[in-house]
Image (spheres, helix red, strand yellow):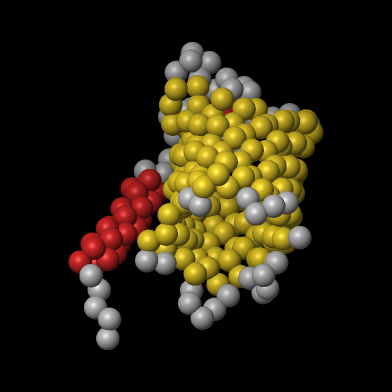
Length: 238
């Protein structure tokens, strides 16, 4: 019977500590949310992906969102982008997004956004870890952004862990993401945190169904919101 080496045991223990720290951050963040305005939302997503070469992919996404306990239309969004695997563990990507959203006067308006990503990936004992850095310019999804300069640069940092359930077609994942933006006084601050957990089912090599729960926490702004979001998505690779 194979025996684990000391380095493998140390790595496994470090990973368990990392997961416990993420869970701790989740409960710490959720503990101070009692005074916020709350809402339950639902998102519906369709992703289409096309591999151009061994390292280059094109992708498109359509998303529909509902708010006010998922009874009211919020916005529709279409995103077109591309990604390139620079190294086995580093991917660069970019995309442009067009949105049709309801404004504060319940009128539909058109919004735009572009973003650039750098994503590092690493595998530890069957756990897929990734860290994504995103720079975006344009509209923001959070109501808190009304307090910030419109169409300003936003920095987003997303930490994600994922694992395939051996012998099944299921994967589970969890992530933590922070949003940093500049106010009208050029004061940079973290204005939102996003926690998520979900599962992915792959009936074949091309199709994937995803069920995901988000907890979005606005902070450091007047009248912050706490959003609970249930998202259902389908992805297909051509």
